[in-house]
Amino acid sequence: TKEAVDDETDGGGGARRNSMIPWFAGARAWVHDALSRRRLERGFQASTDPWAYEKSEYEQARLDALAGMAADRRYGAALEIGCAEGLFTERMAAFCDRITAVEFAPTARARAEARLRHLPSGRVTVHLGNIRSWIPPAGARFDLIVASDVLYYLDTNGGHRFLDEPEFGPFLERVAGWLAPSGRMLVSHAFIGEEERRVRVTYRERLERAGLRLERETEVGRGLDKDGTVCLMSLLRRA
Image: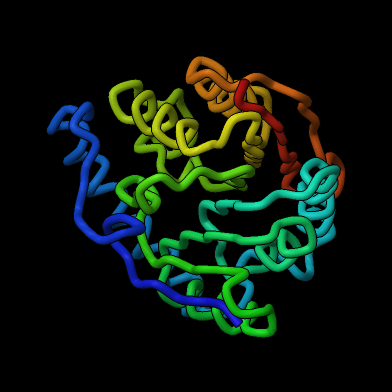
């Protein structure tokens, strides 16, 4: 089984906001997140697997490649940012001893809970919350952090322009700081066309500026999606 935690603040309880974010950027992010949450929740309420993760050839190739990039070692503690209905979380259990998952949409978190119920008790903890304000329990460090097709949902520019430094500089530095020494972060982002690809590359560059080092990077899914979607995947390591 797994543990579900309703947590809009942090892993131990207690609302905390990053004081480095100017108030105007924080207000804009709050409005953006509220609208994004409503849109995502409506999508999950409308149908199971609304983005066809289990049916699409492109999505299956993306999930296979994600697992392939990370599964060359075993991890003690892992964090998944934006677990949706728990499809990749379930795959992570094959190479992670303990998984903390954070999901924005209540319906998706409930489905993740149901999907992961077969796992042994204590293997997975699912938090309902916003990763922008969620903070792990004091002293927690992760050997692996996965952020798959999620960072552009946090982008107040809609994922089409470069991320705003006042919001994402401190945020990505904070997430990178959750890694244990030699811990890894696996990020992936869909894009269509060269302009969106350049924006996605900046996500990885921001993490490098936060102190992570790129191990390898690849593109997956070219030619598999009718709209021309491709996924850029980057595996980074904390020095």
